[in-house]
Image 1 (tube, rainbow, N blue to C red):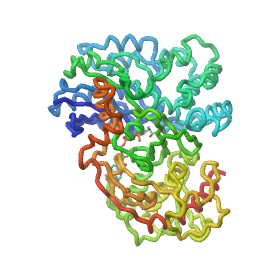
Image 2: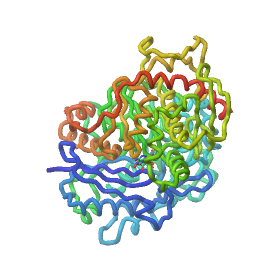
Image 3: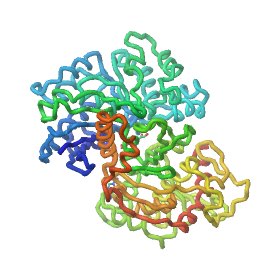
Length: 590
Ligand SMILES: Nc1ncnc2c1ncn2[C@@H]1O[C@H](COP(=O)(O)OP(=O)(O)O)[C@@H](O)[C@H]1O
Ligand SMILES: O=C(CO)[C@@H](O)[C@H](O)COP(=O)(O)O
């Protein structure tokens, strides 16, 4: 028997899953940052100070030792692991000091844990910015202004400038912590931080995850020289290496047909000595969590994936480079000439948890229990048909807006907002409304990525030909949102365990071939495993199947379960909310 490991270093936890050569689960372990490493005093894995959100790097180092200890304790023979890869929260950056590379190379299982050997002097900053950070508005504006505004930035880097993206975050460090920046010898994303740790050497960025920086020119496949220069120009007294050198040069690319997948190296001696991993075990570049999630199921054209972790993301696979300020495009981590399109929301699970606890409080139910919330979400007799509300306890990504909550009533015939209200009749309405508006926002933003099928779907909305809607500054005919639907929708991540949430989301998104839930809630870690296994197989047979063929032929039966079929009436019910959502967002963003 041989195994492959997939790690997932996300906001709230580090997980590690193992699969055997038949892609069957063989073991898993996890470390919850708040609960298992209370010494760091994080809340949901992060420190929040005003708009700044970050995570302690030392916490991740401790978590790597702990998760491997826990995995070994399950009885899994780590000596039989042939390949490792994984996924990490996107955009975060680890700043390594001058000694980082030497300390990594000299990790010694007899000299204490990773945290003892690295935390004291390997890093020039003790924390990494987290994707929920909202503190880089000025840097985003400066960067967009240099490349032709939101559209220009999206054209070059696949996304308009985003507060959480690594380029604006690095620019903020250059401007506000010049000494720490000049003491920095390497900057890794969280993904190549993890790969570097396991290999015991600093390794370059992985190309797909590098697309989440607002620095990488996706079509040219190299860092954008004008954007690098813009950041260089803000250094007041440069002493250390150039930014390109700190970024460890150009990222490693996905390899084409007939080429051997890039291996980052063999696992470092620290891990072979301490956990019994084999010295021949290969480590393949980790990627971003959403990119790995895309690798966890065989998606075909028109399919969409909704990942319900701390953030909510909607993912699609496309061959066309069609950038827009509404969504993100990344290079695909394993399929050459493909891209991943993504819409990302900050206010996913944590916003729902807040409404859940407020609802529970009105009924004297303990916080943390999903039953009452789920019953309200599933309740078709609860009439929310003229109610719309957005709940953004954190500033939101799309629409790009400060933290806010707004509840309105609207006219279903015209979509005009009739009333702003402080509350709905009771908190059950909020439970249903938050899921409806989250799903509706996803729906309007993925529509341009789907193929139009004029006349294929009947709707009771009477849109005059001139009716338009506007999302993220892009004005579109309403009709464009009524003639396209995803084929299948796959739901993954922690909240996908909740059938009521998944069914309501599916009702709004309207998949024509049904909605499915991944039976394994750890989709990103599993995607990392599959990436490692396929890379390992492909190394010995470069002419073997590409990743899509590999997944199509190897996916175990029962990997997904059906949760809903095609629901035309429900989809059409939510057509009536689209103009109202456009009006509400326009008001809030004005
Ligand atoms: N039964 C449930 N109903 C709704 N949400 C749930 C349920 N179980 C877990 N979740 C949500 O899943 C989130 C964690 O998802 P997960 O994919 O593990 O997150 P991440 O990978 O971002 O750390 C939690 O914040 C929680 O709100
Ligand atoms: O910022 C993004 C994507 O752009 C987030 O999706 C992060 O990648 C973190 O995700 P979680 O796994 O913690 O939800």
